[in-house]
Image 1 (tube, rainbow, N blue to C red):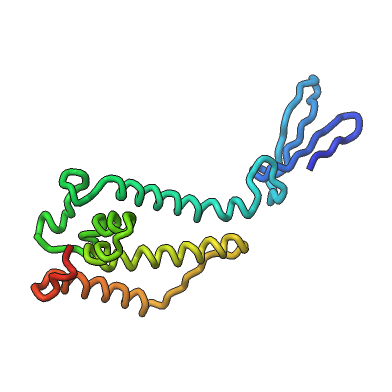
Image 2: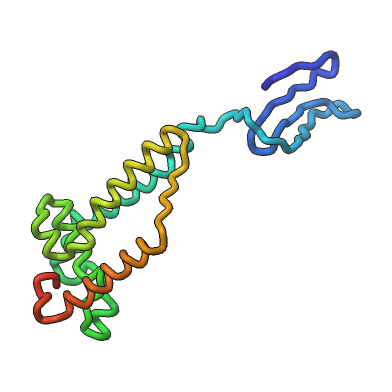
Length: 179
């Protein structure tokens, strides 16, 4: 909002950061700015609402795509590129994430079978992430918040699946789940 007022020539501008800024001349004739805080609905020089809402999901996708691109280009099957799992190194027990980098490498190179063999839970997680990300993007586009309210029983179920997966992959009959 730009307004000019009479002989004092006061310019008001809504900034969205601090509210309204006013430029005016003081008693000596110097130009000065003063501001008032308000809701700042008019934003000057800031992205529109839709662009701001889409920035976070697109930024997250860019970070995940960058990580997958790196893992796709630097093969975790070759020793020395990535650190060893601390739990595996200290105890010899495979954690639920062991084989995740190999799974991501196989997934990004298009070998879904090898991705499932390296870490089935991680591979399922890639598809779950993609589904939640698409939901997030659609809701952000519509101006709706992403609210995924899961009952505690679902969280306990996820924990139970991860625990069972970890135990079974460390037993002799579950060696098919080991990377």
